[in-house]
Length: 414
Image (cartoon, rainbow, N blue to C red):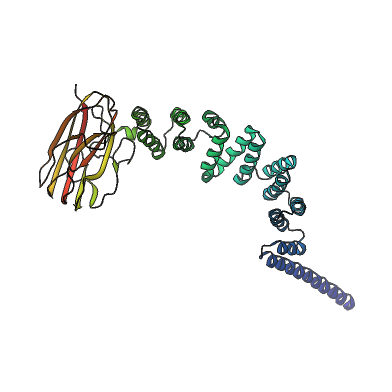
């Protein structure tokens, strides 16, 4: 019995030592393979692959490096070994597809891409490469299907996908039907991409279909499209798009009065800094504050503080759509505090095509209660949009102090 126990203990000890040796050998090989791979060159990965022949990753990396060096046969062999070792990794199939592409083996490339998509059908990188392949091979439907996967799973790729889709189709309706889901944000990304590229007709189609979604549109990109129309001096198109946006977003609609062409005339809501709302730009020596304790009507007014040696433009303005050959009446209320200058601020209205103030109110200087500044004017035969601003004429002298403006109104004279 003791003999048998001793023999059993010796066998167990030998088995443990053998297992430990095997483990240590395996761990050592893995360690030295990883150390070798750190160099990142062909020889390093060849050494790592020899030490760890069952590691598909080393073969995959080796295939990529050999492909870059132009050794296509060796690259193909390593890529094939990688997919054989791990057929469930999409990246290995993509490496094999790249080898087939360089070799001009279209059938092999398509098969490898199909296997990559099967292995990982929702990864944007896989879908992107598959989409490009199908575009090049002329299969537009499959290409758009893969690019749609990219759009759904990687928002940062949206611009690239939309641009590629447009270059491949030049068909806004097709892109909206086959590529872009009913997603207002993506609609407006496509819209502004087309507008910035000068594709006005296609942009108009996207805008119309975005409205047809009957869903709230993101305000900033919608206003950016209206700004594009304003910059093109498309007053009618910009005004129409602006009214459509207001109709879709009740919160914005609240900034407009039926008898007043000026939007947000009492600064009661935060300005959009675009569209037909107030816009602001930084001007040396001028700061803006929305005043909530001193106002003419409502609960807000805009305070402009001056501390400038010279200035003729306060940096606040609004575009207003108008009709040609029409008489208009304008007025606004101003209060001044210790405003010192030889030439005070006043309201300026100009045709957007003009480089000067075409119509001016009186200026304001000193300290005053709320004063009503007004003017009337008649638009020319081609005037469809005017610009309302706060200006000094002339603005070459220094100015110190504050003014508040509130309750502005521009209306056609019956």
